[in-house]
Amino acid sequence: MCSGTCEYQREAAWKHFVQWREKVRQIAWQESWLEGFREGWRNALLIVLEARGLLMDEQSRQRIAACSDLAQIERWLLKAVSVQSVQELFEP
Image 1: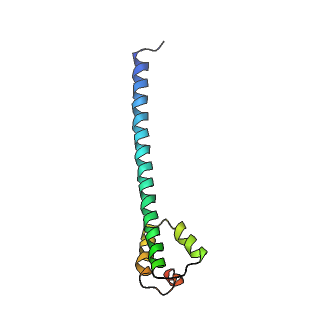
Image 2: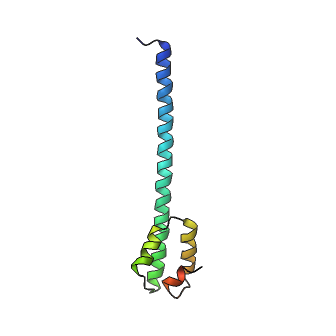
Image 3: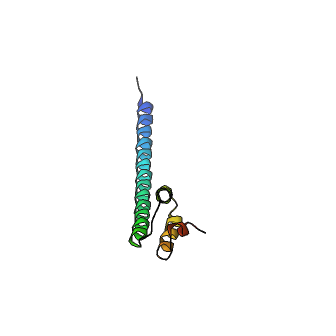
């Protein structure tokens, strides 16, 4: 049989589980939102390059698609408006 202490422990464990589950949901939502934001910036970069008529090889397209560093994507996007080639985009 379970005494009052056992019931208290069960309730406390459930409370901790619910808090942990909510924290995991928040983290998952933030990560999902951030990945969506990155995807939007990568798409903007591709649109700018395409609108400027710059030819892009598959390797460059994959490099952009694989980048998860927002600061790097932003630097590329700023450079994309003035570079003469996609290769120039990746130069330091």
